[in-house]
Amino acid sequence: MQSYNSKNDESIIRIPIPGYSSFSQGGEVTVTYMPQRMDPTRLHNAIGLTYRAPNSTTTSVNGSVVNLLNLPPSPQDSPMAGNFPDPMNGRNNPMTPPDSPMELDGNSPMFPSREKTISVLYSPHGVAYTAIEPYASSHLAKESALPLTALFHSINTEENPWFMGGVVAVGYPGGAEIIRNLGARYWISAHDEVKDNRGWSVAWIKSRMFSSEEAQQKLDEETKSTVLHQDGKYGTLGPRTQIFRLDVGEQLRIV
Image (cartoon, rainbow, N blue to C red; front, side, top):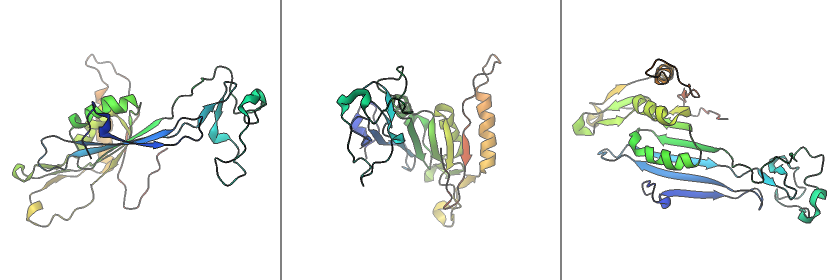
């Protein structure tokens, strides 16, 4: 998988998602790889994922907007099967009867806006922000995918002596830097499980452990401090990032 290059669109893997009908806009999944330069361990990289669902609205022949998710199910086996109405029938179209709650007023846009893009950044060992900044400022900004929906990043720091590779897991400091620059609704602890450090190769690792509560308090305090301008006036505090450390098999529902 090639590294991301803002000048090369082929460095982003794009997976199209068909629309609900031939009249609605399709969705897309993108996958992007961002390695950190000058990394002797080759551990520090990030995978960026975005998901934009197919548009659930389309425009009828009379200019009103129809929400396809609210349409009654087709009696046929296929969800897309059925006897589609004649588009030349205008307001007699059974899909949009005059009293239908799916028909909006004349101020409805002819082309409804796209669905909200979900964005995920996965970097269990952490990565320098300079490695993901071009991706954020070009691709994520273009997709209106900021702040991030979820950041998967270590909270604990793990460090070897320099002659054995140095930093193994950037932990809280690196994740907090990403949050300060990009924001995120959720920060999910990654690669923070208890490790078997027996053996010569890991004997010198130094760790700094953070509980999710400690990391949350620290992040909240730093976020409030960031919005305090130098002139002493408070700026606007954005949505709070919630930090979670999940057990094996535990699920977190993001809505």
